[in-house]
Amino acid sequence: MRKLRARWSVLADRVDASTPAGRDRTVDALRAFAILGVVLGHWLVTALTTTADGGLSTTSPLSRMPWLAPVSWVFQTLAVFFLVGGHLAARGHAAARERGVPYGAWVGQRLSRLFRPVAAVLAVWAVAGAGMLLGGAEQKTVHALLRLVLSPLWFLLVFAALTAATPLVARVNPLWPLAVVAGVDVWRFGQGGPEWVGWVNVAAGWLVPYTLGAAWSRGAFARRTPAALLLGGGAAGTAALVLWGGYPASMVGVPGAEVSNLNPPTLAAAAFGLAQCGLALLLREPVARAMRRPRVWAAVALANLSAMTIFLWHQTAMMAVTTLGMLAPADLPGLHTVPDSPLWIPARLLWLPVFAAALAVCWSAFRAYEQARRPRRGTGAPSRTVAGSAVPTSGRPAAEEVITHA
Image (cartoon, rainbow, N blue to C red):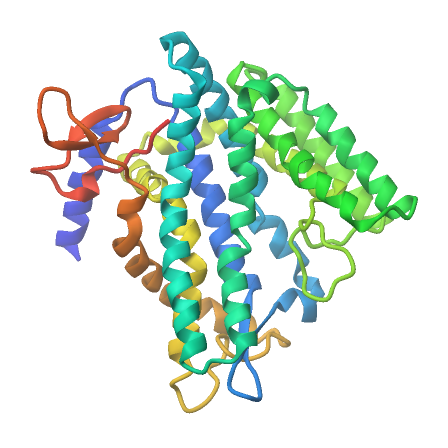
């Protein structure tokens, strides 16, 4: 154990020393927090239970224990992800224009970072799904598993579309998409409008934090007052909408619920996102202080290097553990059992390290699809971007290449 700590300390010091002084580590920390929130949230509020015919079906503790709704307030962190994404995309596009980089080259590079790891997970699950069906697995079981893998990809499609539209939306006032969300909800819920109109909010709802991030890149939140107003106004609006507006308290979808705050996003989800973004912006200074600690910063950098790999494979890790657990002679508490009792919660928490270990296996197998290589100047040796500078991959442990692209 001491040797591991010593090696980690040495690695953390080297990562810290290789990071340019001007890098905003807070941005990386917020992105890592957002991904971690999504992963833990899915592991806690998604359950695969065994069926009478030996298959698997999906359920959620939120549908059977609605008093757990506050858990979704902690782990539904997509607004922070879009906030950071808008900030980085607006800043990156502005820098590209200054360097004379054409729009096509800029957007192609950014989108390739998203879709290279997506192609890997789609290919693996296409083969796995076909294999399960040919092996005699129940169609509803395969459908349940594929839905868990593929359903989170919707947010990547939205994120990619907003990234591509950055030159058009970077200077949009966040109040405009917020007004669209409000108008759609009034039409849907107040005027009996068609359900399909709610899908307008898939773009408008996430455009709110994305444009806040773009405003952040222009210095709109240099003072704390605007962020405090976001936090206070968003929290008050969310509370009013839940208490008196008829919106669900859960900020994630709940199986069997009549209305979902997330699918598509509602005004309550948008207001909650404003509060989350305000809080994230207010916490920049203490987060920046924490990021000056080499060990903390190295952990954040590692998470950012494989953020998409972690996101894309975390459901697969959970399903792999659940499926292998079916080899046991009886249903395992917290893994296969129905989440209808408070006792399910501590049992589930005990499985989180096992899920993490399975995710580590997936990470080691597929992280290369996210970490693009590029030739180093003057040599043929491949390199990767480390804290904004090119570092050769040969001659150093791969774990040292831990800083993501800005």
